[in-house]
Image (cartoon, rainbow, N blue to C red; front, top):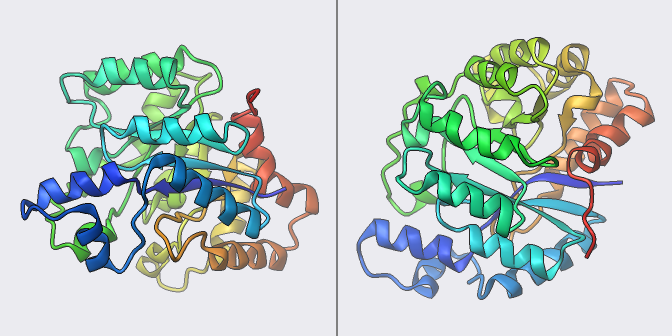
Length: 299
């Protein structure tokens, strides 16, 4: 069993948003050509390509993240096309005037199941009343979760296109997630990348709140901030504090032709195996926990 909790759905609408922010009038094909990435085409075509990619790598299901605010419809189209393969997440700026309305529609009408908050990107503290308002909406729908990016934040495509990334890293503290998790104990919260440099604080949040989960995704290059730290040691500590039932495997895969990042899986599989993690624990991390949080819905 292999499921991926963290894949970005880089749709045509996603690239159109970046083009508008750049202000040069680039078409999506021009932008993709500059990046040397494949043009995603329609959401349905991109969804089909993701299914082929998952099949080629033995991945059963994946969470697809709408990676700019306002792109919920693209991921919703992918889910409608392959409801047994995908779970939909969406990025939201909770300070936007229509944030509550967008959340209700995304979770209700569109059937998305994960709200993604990026406090450092949108400059909205987790203690802000707007955050509580949208989290409250999500909490009313079983089978959903709130994903909160904490720690260091670097968006590679923005850097490649010369777009500014004026992130306030002070706002991405996992202890703020703990505050929300305590207020909504029946709602799962997911902190990606083991806290992305705030590993200690992410562990504290998970130790305090039984509904805080850690996503293992990406290369976890934040490890370099702690001299002597290794991926194997990170897994050992995370399992000791949070338990295998609250670790969710992810890759942070995004664009094509690179596709699904098998190297991320191989490195994490090797780390857990080196620890002597029991097969049942590895089954939970690499797929079982995903299915428990996001039970498959009927096609």
